[in-house]
Structures are given as structure tokens and as C-alpha cells.
Amino acid sequence: MQYIQNNADLEAIADKLNGVALLAADTEAAGYHRYRDTVCLLQLSTRLETYVVDTIAIRDLSPLSQTFAQGETEVVFHDADYDLRLLSRDFGLTVNCLFDTKIAAQFIGEQAFGLGSLVEKYLGITLEKKHQRADWAQRPLPADMLHYAAEDTRHLPELRDALREELVKRGRLAWAQEEFKLAQQLRWTTIDGDAFLRTKGARDLKPRELAVLRELHAWRERAAESRDVAVFRVLSNEALLELSRRMPTRIEDLGSIPGLGPGLIDRRGTELLEAVARGAGLTETDWPRFPRHPRRPPPDAEFESHVEKLKVARDKVAETLQLDRGFL
Image 1 (cartoon, rainbow, N blue to C red):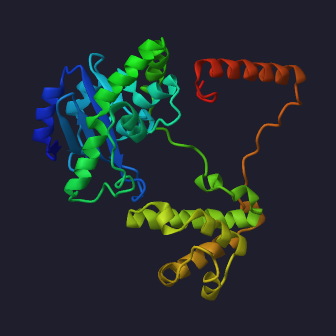
Image 2: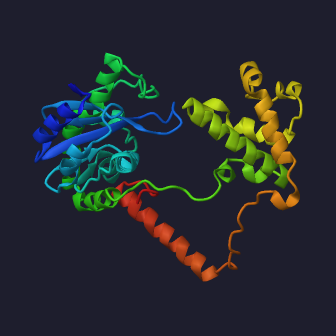
Image 3: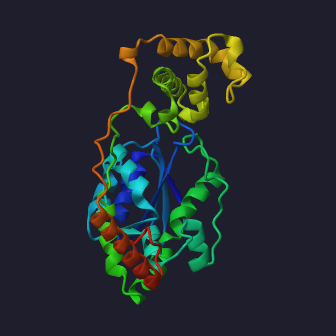
């Protein structure tokens, strides 16, 4: 495994990779620990060599763009969805010849399609799991974390071969390739609308309580961004909702709210009360409201009958093909 930490070394491996027939790839991001989910490592494996690129030290991955985008190189990911979105957003990298081992496994009918399960079943290799929740933004990275990251792509070429062979045997390679082409078009998208309204449980709040939630949610975003930590590490959604319901006015009231420890209350208690007061003090005209959904049309018995018949047909085919119904 070669650890790439500067532009010169990246350009050197990019020259070696240009025109390679197959390249396995994966990313490690920091969303579990950091405010913004940023790509921290990019792992690359050919059939013979593995490279781990430090994407915090190297912010320009354009030397790799030709290899990723050219149709002659098949780029292998496991569950490419999020990786492709992040690589497109942060580095402008796109893939034009994708093989996704998760999608391939689903078309074979595998019920356990995590990378570890598939590598163990098809290759007889057990992958370590101890760094799944690691902070990949920390520097320097310990040697065992770099080794762990490299293992995620080291075995992908061989796994791809095994799964592809199964797809060919079952006559389903073309099915999978259709899905690969759809998946490689994935790009990062920003969800419009007020984020606080998407908090699970927000619809159960009264309008004034929803106004308090909006202020608390905005406070949490600012606090998480300033500390560069994931928002749930500042305050959980459950604690936000409980604060919104109770609308405390005194520091002493905060101690009884689940999720608010003494340290947080000492450091940020005044700020929390100020956010609650801002929301609670708004007049009715300034209360947030959920957008109205279009009124549902009256039930259509004929339509519902068609849907049920399609479900039955779908289920029969899924059973025949031994595929998950939802996946089919």
C-alpha cells in the first residue's frame, strides 16, 4: 500500500493508472464526527497495487479525472451511491463505466450484501470492522487505520470477478449494467426547505413549539459549525424536541431535560434559554408552519385494484428469481 500525501505523488500514480482496465475505489468521510461530511481519504486498487490518497492534504484530484471518466476503465465501488455524490461535489470526479458490487449482489439474490459479508462468502476473507466509526479527518492517521482503509478496495477486483461470473451464469449481467449506468449519474443535491421541519417528531409540536424548535435548530447548527463537529454531538434531536415542548425559562429547569448534561448546561445553558425565548416570544403571524400538501384525490377503486394485481405479479416474479421484492 502506498500512502499519497502530495500533488507530485498523485500525478505519478495518475500516470500509472491512466488506461488501466479495472480500478477499485472507495472513500472515507468524516460525517460521523465533523460538521460537514468531507472526503478524507480516497482508496484506489488495481489488481496488483493499492493506493490511499490523503484528500485533506490534496484538494485537487483532477489528475485522476481522466481515469475515472474514460469508458475504457471499469471503476469498481461497493455501494457507490454516497461515494459518487461526495466525489462529484468535492472534486468534480465522475465515473463513466461503473461496477457496483452491492448492486451486483442484490441481482444475484444475496440477502447479506454488506462488503464484509460478501468478501467473507466469496473470497473467504474476514475484514476488520473496528474503524467503521473512526474520525478519518484526524491527522496523522495511525498505521492500522491506513491498513483498514486499504483493505476496503484491495479485495474489490476479485469480488467483482466472482459476482460478475454469477451474474453471467444467471443471465443477469445486462440487468445489473443497466443499474450501474443509472447509478453513475448520481450527483450531490441540496434539499430545499427548512431543515428543522424535517426533524423526526416535529409534526407533533404545536405552532409556538415549532417556532422554538426553529431557533434551537439554528443555534445547534451554528454551534456545530464553530466546533467542526457533527450536529448530534452538540445536542440530540430528542433533546431539541423536549426543549421545544417545555420551553424552559431558568437554568435550573434545564437539568431535568434528558440529553442535557451538566457540562453543556454550564457552557451553553444561557444560549439555549435565549434561543427558547426568541422562539416563544414570536407572535402567531411569525410562527413557522409546514407547507400544505395538495389535497389527495378521492380513492379510485379501479386504480387500487391494478396496484394490488401488480404487487401480486411482482411478488411471484421475485419468488421465481429469488430476489428481494423491494429491490425488484
